[in-house]
Amino acid sequence: MKESVWTESPENDSKAVVEKVESKKSQKSLDEVNGSIKVPDNAGFWRTLAAYTGPGVLIAVGYMDPGNWITSIAGGAQFKYKLLSVVMISSLIAMLLQSMAAKLGIVTGKDLAQLTREHTSKWGGFALWVITELAIVATDVAEIIGSAIAIELLFHIPLIVGIIITAADVLILLLLMRLGFRKIEAIVATLVVVILAVFLYEVALAQPNMQQMFAGYVPTKDIITNKSMLYLTLGIVGATVMPHDLFLGSSISQTREVDRNNEKALAKAIKFTTIDSNIQLTVAFIVNSLLLVLGAALFFGTNSTLGRFVDLFNSLNNPQIVGAIASPMLSMLFAVALLSSGQSSTITGTLAGQIIMEGFINLKMPMWAQRLLTRLISVTPVLAFAIYYHGNEAKIEDLLTFSQVFLSVALPFAVIPLVIFTSDKKLMGRFANHTWVKWAAWTASVVLIALNVYLICQTVGIIK
Image (cartoon, rainbow, N blue to C red):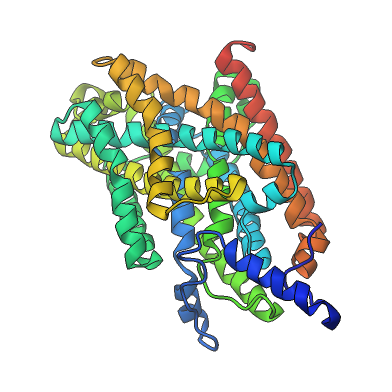
C-alpha cells in the first residue's frame, strides 16, 4: 500500500522523494484546475467556507438529475408521502460516501480512479474502466434525454436535434474551464437555484398536507412488506448514489490549494469541503422531497399515467388531473427545471468522464479531445436509439430504465474501493475512517449493493 502523502521520508532517500514529487505533478487529477483556487489562511469561518463552497454544488446535481424525477414523482402519486423517509435515508448515505470521497482526494492528492488503477493489474484496470465508462454513459442517457425532451417541450424542436444540441454543451464546458473552475461552479449553482425555485413554487401551489408530509419522514414497515412500495423504494435508493459522483468528488475536492505536508491544513480542507458537500446535498434532498411531495399533492388518487416526462408536462396543464392550479405556465416551469437539471448534470458528467478516462487508462491526449471523446461515447447510443425509434418517444424514454441497470452494476466498483482506501491507515494516516464511520460505510455499501442487485433482478425479470 502507498505511503501517506504527508509522511516524511528518510533524508538519504531524497532522490526517491524528488522523483515521487515529480511523478505526482504529472498525475494530478483534472490537472488544469487542480489546486487552482486559493483559500484564505487566517480568515473567519464564513469567509473560509465561501472559499471552499462550489465542489458540493457539482456533486449535488448528480443526486437530482432527470433519472430521479420519474421515480420520485411516481412514488408520491402512488403512496403519497410514505416514501419521504426513503429519500431522507438515501441522502444521509450519500452524505457519508461523498465526504469520504472528498477526504480521499484531499489527503492523497489522487482521485478514486487513479488509486483504484494503482492497486489493480493493467488488464484489471482496463476492465474497471470499461465498467465505469458504461456507468458514465448510463448517467448521461437520463441527462441527455431529459434535456432533449425539455428543449422539445419548450421550443418544439425535434428530439434528435435536441439531443445534438445537448451534446454540444461540451464546447461550453471547454470555454468555462479556460475562464476558471469558479465559473463552472457558479453556472451549475445558478441552474440548481432555478430547479429549487420552480419546485418550491409548484409545491406551494399544490398546497400539500403539511402534517402528513412531515409524518412521511418516519419509516414504516410498509416500505418492506408492500411489494409495489418496495420496488419504488429500490428505485429511489438505487438511483440516489451515483458511481460517477464518487469519482468526481474525489477529484474536484482538490481544486482548492492545500499544503499536504501540513496536517492542520489538511484537516481544515477536509472540514470545510465536507460542510460544503453536506449543505449542497441537503439542497438535493429538498429537491427530491419536493418532487415526491408534488407527486403526492397533485397526482395521488387520480390514477394518472406518469411514466414519462411528457405525461408529467401534459398533466400539469390538465384541470381534470391537478385541478384549478393547472396552467401552461406550470408545465413550462417544469420543462425549464428539467432543462436546468439535464444541463447541469451533463456538465458534471463530462468532467467525471475525463477523470475516469485519465485515472484508469492514463489516456494522453489534449483536454478538448478528451472531453469531446467522452461526450461522443455517451451521446452515440442515445442518438442511435432516437434515430431508430424516431417518433416513438416512449421507447426512447425506456432507455432511462435500462440506464439504471448499468449504474447498479458499476456501483460496487466505486463504493468498495472507496471504503477500503479511506479506512487504510497506511494510505490515509490519522485521517483514516474512525471505526464507527468504517462500519457505517460498510453497512450502507452492503445495503446499496443488495438493493441494486435486487433491482437488476426485477428489471430483467428474474424476480417478479
